[in-house]
Length: 482
Image (cartoon, rainbow, N blue to C red; front, side):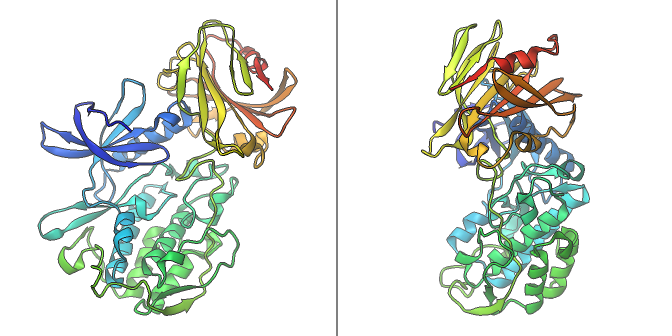
């Protein structure tokens, strides 16, 4: 990966990390003599409208909440190729995942850290927001003054939604081992209790006698017993057991309630948002220090832990199916073919080859897709442009019907029309049209089964503003499958 020299007004120094949805760079603001983290939407997701919505929604949400326990957003922008980016405060202390990779935390530090994380998630819950992906990689540290003091920050709200939008037919998302069981059910109501489950799983990872076995991905209701360290108070073990109950009704109602229970169980007083330095710092123990607990035996507790396997198409919260990166645009007019997909191009449109990011066939190769528009490379970035993404996936057909697949791909700020079925060129399409108050006035989600083999074909369409009601059906009639 070649590092850009600049993003906006920031000089790029190095790569900080790469995720499923985004790449994060360390930038330097020369005018303010300050470093920032710049999160850029990954190129292979840049053509999907819902991924762009989620990326920008995360930045807007963090900006709206603006709290010392959450990563702060300075500004957003767009690269010359149309990909959005967000400029964030730099967490110079790294992540909890990094620290756990170096060594385990001593029990007192682990308990204090878990309390800090609960307090940060409680901020989200007070504002009606569910994070849905609480993992060590999303817990960051930032220097907060002399003496080694630092703040514990909650990051990566790309999966978070307002409670009203997160209920009903919500998208399945999360990380195996930390995701609540109900997050694997597309019809379940996802609320603050899903985050309580994630907090409980995080606590078990921090306090387990054998951390290597602390994150099962089994989906049954009776996973193996876990051993916590000998110095973990039994009352803390009871808190973690309740937090990770299989049924949401059996858990604490929110992070604040769990935090109160944890403080009582561990005998901690209420603590401020900035962790103290020195021995109170939530940092890793040294290799020879008293904090090492990896091989010590511990008490056994039968915890009702149901690690849920991600059924979404990609790791770290990918939801449903998304288009991938584009290749070279093809001439205007006529037809365009990629793999078993051939489309008839509307007048004035061209197409470019793509892959369906996160979708892989039995051979391990990305499944085929294409983007078509008057300007296919600009379609996802420019809401004024009509266009469409079309993809074919055998792996999706194995887990979802066309109607079930579309139920995963709702647009929370838009109003859906009733679902309809139309038969075009021997293919029976399920179609849902959304009217939106901002951005693109209309987004059409449609899916069908390949008539000759086990594969699902998906088309996301933004029709021209002046087009008539037959435009979508005409475009679908021009999708030919081999």
